[in-house]
Length: 427
Image 1 (cartoon, rainbow, N blue to C red):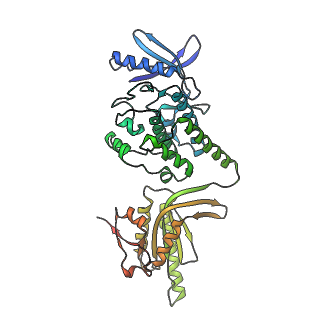
Image 2 (image 1 turned 135 degrees about the vertical axis):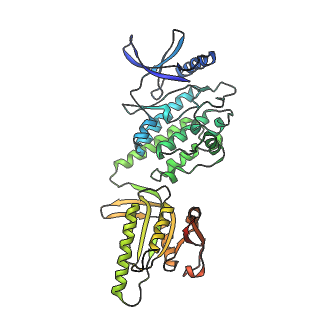
Image 3 (image 1 turned 180 degrees about the vertical axis):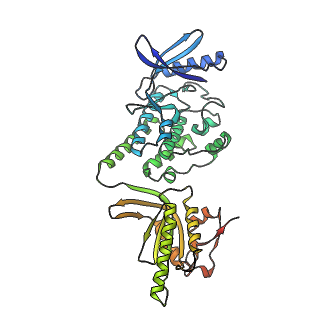
């Protein structure tokens, strides 16, 4: 509806931002009333984390909303350049939550909170801007109307044009937090219609699943902000401020300790096991060494982490250090290439599982801990030579791209639990 220009207040000798109705559109009375209504609502606010209104003036028949000029960039621009580290992201979220709380305390529902509508100044503070479709909680209907707002940042009730309250803003704040911490939108889809469907009917992927480096308590809170039902979200922005202040304090404390950071990563693990051959030990050693070289070559291409055991056991972790779009499919492709390797190498038994690992970088090497490692290793111990077994978790993912079938008796040496055999790629 409006356009924002940089201006200069000659009387007070200061830069200002000037919002006016777009010059390429007809200035109807309804649009002028909306801009003036925005000015009235916005002028109720005086808070360090909300851009301040200075004046509302009319010149040559054109209305202008004059506000504080922030030297800095929008949060969307900052994220596009380089996503802030978790500690900095939490500091920004605390600022945004404080600004939102101030608006709600004055009876204002923003209705369009998103990365683009938060400015981060040179001093590092974040300020909420653009109250263009904001509503007063005194409005009996409290609807923005279809087409008003940004679909990916709307609450389900706003997307359906139902009555909204402050908890709608908290949902939008949850979307903003999710995008800031992960770099992706929780309900992304090619069209607004599909985004609306995701918003209103489909569960999002947990933040910790998308970005495992985020602390579990933060992920849980963001997931709560994104509840479909307003009753399940935090009751007020003040509660969000308190929770986020606690998260930020713990993140600062962790940064001050000498303990190395522990990362959590969603990974796919391929475990390999080679049963020592009877007969010529020298030839067996050569075949095993050839296999290990091939494992390292393929893993290096995928930037996967390799842990070699006592010669006959190896674990390869896909998703650390490099994250792939689908770690599990990359792992399966790796396994398929290994079992097709020529007869000059030892024939491995393989197992694949998916899950979370804790990663700790030490001077002596990388430490990986997680049940997924044991799951893949157990399957490798059960698999016959040149067979690849996958867990039920992995089977759910891989069945979209590979032929995956329940194990036959000759695929396993121990049939005590359910496993699936990995086959060829689907046509």
